[in-house]
Image (cartoon, rainbow, N blue to C red):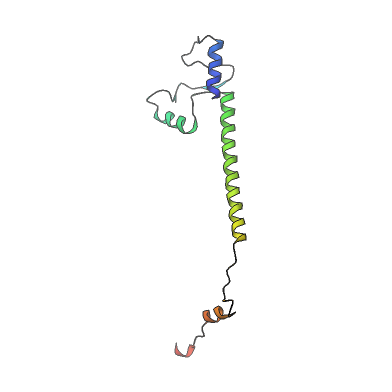
Length: 123
């Protein structure tokens, strides 16, 4: 995304001639680490982090801002969907018919059946 665009612009400005094998614009660069390069075959953890979260060992201001903005949009969308689901569940619970405990034909019969007198003399 943004990192590829910035890399393209830097390569175009320098005619792809740089003093570093991994070309990056030092004016807008936040970090350029020599370790944790996901493009190297033996860096399994860096490759995993790149696949899951978009990790790169070279970051610019634009890529960091876009990365943070992306995750903020994801978080806001997930919170919105959770709240929408919660409101729908509450609305469905309020619209559901209320079940009565007793029989409508013989009010109080359920309570009378549930409460049985206990004879304490036989205990």
